Length: 202
Length: 221
Image (cartoon, rainbow over all chains, first blue to last red; front, side, top):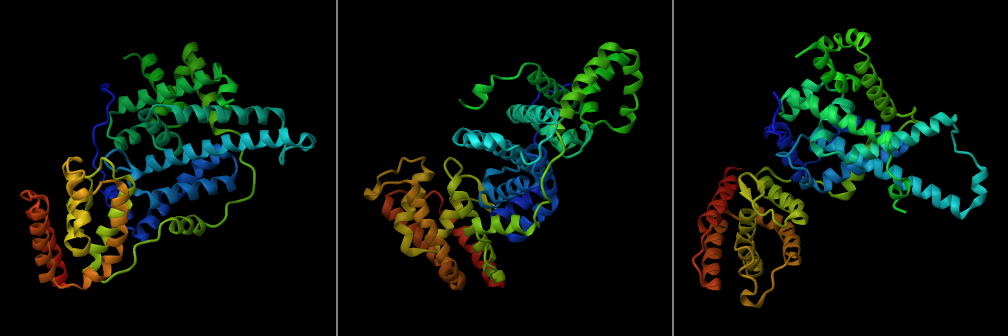
């Protein structure tokens, strides 16, 4: 059975309690969240940035934001796992974009750098794959939130679509459909990439 | 539903590796005999492969402690306080966290069952010196801004933030005050509020109740 697409509210007593302690400034709550979701946040960030050091910066930003602005997360509107995963993804995509801009500026400023190859030059295919990967992750970050939530649980957090449905409080059929809609629109992004000049904000 | 339709619906979950084993087992057999599903499967799996991207490069990550210490620098943790003071300290910390996001969220629960409004009411019950400014602030918020300008004061967020700093420093004093004084203070507050605004206080019971609850907690410990 397909639902109307709106998530039914799911009570998340554990997340609500953690959130309450974060709001109170309880340091041990931050450590708990980090133990539970630190690996996931890094996994998401490294997949997008391809750089463990950058992923570490992203993780730092994500947990600092949760801690210093706890009300940005609302336990009535979603699970902490998906929220952190989506925040890490967004920050990682931003990091890669700004990195690409810096690299471009540096090249423009100093033509000598043209001669210096990347630190780890790969075969051409690797370069192409990296660009397409970023293209896909940018598109993923722009998907409607209901689709993104299921993708994050299924793809980054390793849940089956059934487990994702339970965690989100939606019917299994809806989770399946959202995965399908999401992955198809990502596949179409590859077939018909956005204007690169617009992408770069030129 | 035919096998074709059933498998077709599963292909995205399959490409993400998000099928439970029993359903996963049904896919390859159908792909072997259905060209259109095989093409769709290849297209979706290729998309996931590109999402995976090439292997990361660079050294391993530094130790985990960095992440938490950076967060704690951005916002200091709540100080360890005596048991009897914990509810008050929690209210202060919660309110501090909320104030940057407060616009339009004055009914957000802050501590126990108090929303922002009740917490502010409680905090000003405990701080006689700030009562004038804060009552104006609270009333303004409570009435959706209609009290703007009472007593010549303008209401704005700056007011809330400046009051907030004082509530935090009030923490210690309040915890030492005795319960009778807290309840008395809250009733005094309500009276002053009524004189000040020329109106009947509609949240009297909430202010007094909050003060009593807090007093019971202090008394127990």
